[in-house]
Length: 490
Image (cartoon, rainbow, N blue to C red; front, side, top):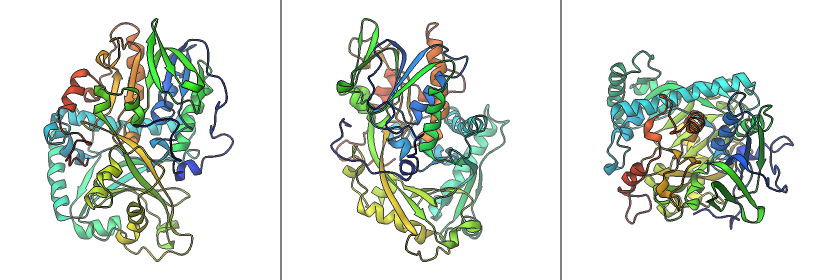
């Protein structure tokens, strides 16, 4: 479980290190007293989920005149939102394997229509984010880039699996309610073409589809600053205000930050991701969510991968990495937990259940430092000051069915059984950048509709994301990541 104050000092990511100016919101209201009046909305967590929730609530015409308070345990984007790979990459048809595999065998257990619904949300997330960035004029401020991603397969088995999944996806799309949307993904199974196109030595095939990259710490900050400056709402951010307990008294939620004080709120929205179990100790939610450590690095490329020779696409590969090329600071890439465990770089105890982001395992650091040289064709010998420059870790949150928990917390998870006004958006399973921007939009719409009675979900929101007591129990009936002898990797 995560606890505050933390008994360790977290690593500093590339993103956190490069957004420390006076307008960065570091230490914002750190020493100010928490509000003593009742607030309309208390958002717990100032990562991407909390920031976009605050942004949505404070747009003109949404909840005008309402008071919104955002509480952050440390600094803005101090968790996974400021430690990820900077990749806004929708899942492709490759995700169908996990989506359609029964939960009893480690998958999600969706039917085809539900799987296509989940994939379509992610397709629309990139479109939505691009639109917001353009309307707000944030493009250069947050290093936003929109283009295409390569999903590279380096083994014959991996390429053959993609053959089948692409055929399955394209035929299912043609027969679904999404049939009029042009296919956004292509698949090429030809080693010679794959190696020339992707510049990867052992590529057997590659898919190509929409993706974006960005500076996640700057983007989170931009969303929060827009909320704080809203002309129609009163929004306040308090950093270093770790929430330790939430309870309900006389119809109001009491959000307890111990030494910092308490906030009384009509509604509480938990955007706490890997730290959520600490607020639901011993509950079904606690069991359903598992924190896990990931690792990433910033790589300064040699001249052979700089300037006009820099990578034109983002990447994911089946031999271990997800990767972007930043506009000014070289490459950022991360190590999948399936790779770190599958290759024996780390032990399960180093990954699942680990909330310590103060270190990068030496084997993981070595793998990250050497990956580009070992896998990209023509990667020259690096000079002093090139190669691996910064390494960091971050804590993500796995769920039992790999999908996020979104909606009103079930009454069974709250002492006394009254969960009215308590909402959650957490458990993004290491894939928050591909989901959050629309998840929080739909959640805010749902919360507002709840004021008129039972909340209603927009038809574009995947029902498989909605938290329910039945879903928690169904997920907790299968093998967990921390169960003795567990072999779950994804």
